[in-house]
Length: 255
Image (cartoon, rainbow, N blue to C red; front, side):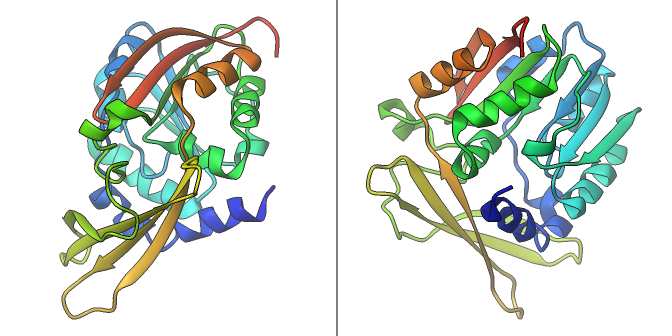
């Protein structure tokens, strides 16, 4: 387990209380296809639960896995609010994932980018493959990079065209204490643009500013597809929308 992974999990402790209010996930186009004929789904890393409304509408049993207990608490409340009927949770790091018997594994909202900034991409996908059974579906939603991504800022928290160090206000939301919170961000790429550090600052009238940050790897399409093939996954469908690339893949016969 890397020290960075522990640091990442700890950084989410302060954000967990308002995680649901802050979150604005882009529901993957391929999620509806993936949910069409299954009964169970697991989301990892779940954060506050990104696609719980879609799971509730599909009537599937849900398991949420994350390494942050405060985030899982927020996700549990969120699941109840949107009507998820059957919910299980698990607190695990990537390297210690339990056996996943669910038919679909969802890695949402650029979580793949964050995991790959801590652990090599091939290792990330290998850990996922080791946890599932042959035939399990995997839905990845990760940041698109390349020329076309400049016209579609990724998920409103990352814009490859934004100059490094420039402050941008990207979100305003109401926290659990009914205070209006404004979120600003600045981003800093590595020299080869293979990773980006995004710094978020939260301002609330009359209260001290809070700052946190995330590191994201920025693999291109070829790197992701090569890593999938190398770790026993077979791509079946792809879709690109709103700065995200989606891949639906199936687990092969051997781990």
